[in-house]
View (cartoon, helix red, strand yellow):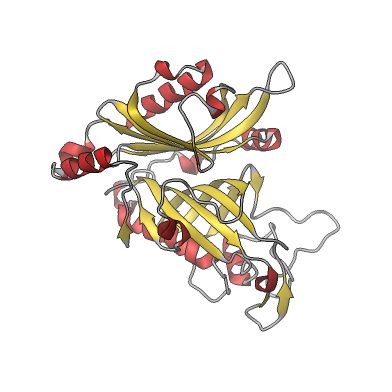
Length: 343
């Protein structure tokens, strides 16, 4: 597994070399869980005030939104009104990073504003935020659905020490998920629990009840994937093959205590002839987008016993082939997993 730590400038690279010479314990205890949660609170409070001076930012802080490098004060700094009621957070003390998927109220056509959703990663060094990475979905419907769903208890539950996986095991499990969905053929061994449940942008993507008067699609005979199936059934159907590439796979926060990993990626759909493929039993089907298409996906994975139990995601349609703004071109086009926690 390649360990990728990317810095925006020469000064930061020099600082990184100096930091690497310090004992791991010394580097990991600058800011504990509560401290990092406080940084997220301070950042979101500053957004709501539209005031960058309300939070401690490094002079050379790097800020991107949906892959675009922005100046501090632009973008949602002008439109963020208040936090919503939905928030899933992954706190990574050794990495001094915190990442979250949350809802927020934004400027809109009504006095109360309209809703939106945000995936955000903050890096803290020397008492300052040095990196801000955001993916934003400006959708009142996504806001409504996420708020209505609420946060699943599993995503905040602490695991007994004997059940906790190592950081490397959690990252490998996420990579197994990505590799299983890329050109999915239904023949792999997938790291999915029997009761795995996936929700993306508030939309329930698995285990939906069969509507009255309809018959539940059979994964062995259906011509396209169904949200009535479990995570494992979807993978074993082989009908996700139209996901041509899962790239720029970046794990940016890991919480061993809770069995959580926060990962960012892009799902490319090449379309054209890649839409037609064979199912595990040899049937030929055509399914998937009819034009080149990319999802920018932020996901929190709950992992126990090396199996994914729950997935909470934010899914944004982006220009085909776009990159995160944090990777080199080669890394952005790669389907390797990158551990960006530095540990």
